[in-house]
Length: 205
Image (cartoon, rainbow, N blue to C red):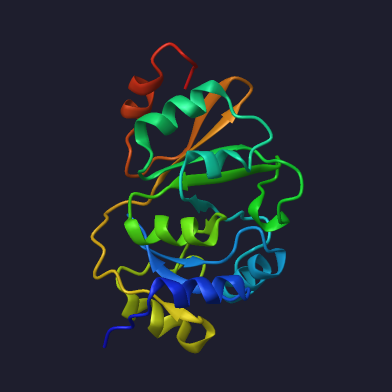
């Protein structure tokens, strides 16, 4: 069985503080309005996720993504120009006022612009970034189909958007900017060598 809902219905759910499941360029993700503290808390409770493990976000474009940052290093803009839309999550210091569940221990937020049209359309229509936590309980395999996600979460998710079977073999690569250096927190779909080539002599990795 397929679970097909249109974008308008999914946006209605997000605006109401509810959770949705949607496809990304890697795996299915659970979406919540990232600027709603209550929605982010609902996501953590659903996934049984530890509160000290922040949730990455998907934005419609780099402007929306970087509006969440206190400061954007030039190298972050270089990487965004090269790899966005794409499976690169950039972690940089967050601006004040974001829900605590989005922030790591250093007060940073992770974000990317997905190449998947449904993911980008959701963020664009909502006008704010959405969470991109994988559609599974913490520690379990990520869902490659909407049916796998539905089997886990059932009616606890308000809306399911079906994007077919997703064939990614790796999650997004996650990088952080610390003291003028780029640190790769997780090497995923974009290899370390490609990050280094994009930055060249701009910063150290």
